[in-house]
Image 1 (cartoon, rainbow, N blue to C red):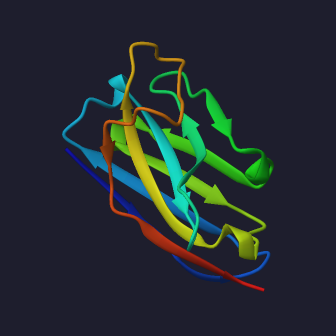
Image 2: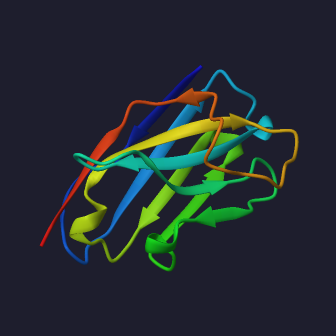
Amino acid sequence: VQLQASGGGFVQSGGSLKLSCAFSGITPEFYAIGWFRQAPGKEREGVSCISSTDGKTKYRDSVKGRFTISRDNAKSTAYLQMNSLKPEDTAVYYCAADLVYNGSYCGFVGMEFWGKGTLITVSS
């Protein structure tokens, strides 16, 4: 199983970035996908997640209205569109996969597989 996050970089405050998470070795319809981040000196936190089949989503409060998660199971890829970025969004972003038995569920605990992170730096 592999998950590979990409699309990070340096952006000014107010800018946008789109992350991609390409996954292989899993059946997409059985796994919810989550995006997490870890800022320097802080614990990892869940940012957004999307269910495996019906596209239900969750967002942490600080990114609601700015970030949009999506997925394309045919391409085995999930995305995180990030708009209106703020310096406090600076972090290493990770994607992870969670084996689920409910195609409408996603969450931020019990992830089975993790990818390597991609760094996002937002300047003020």
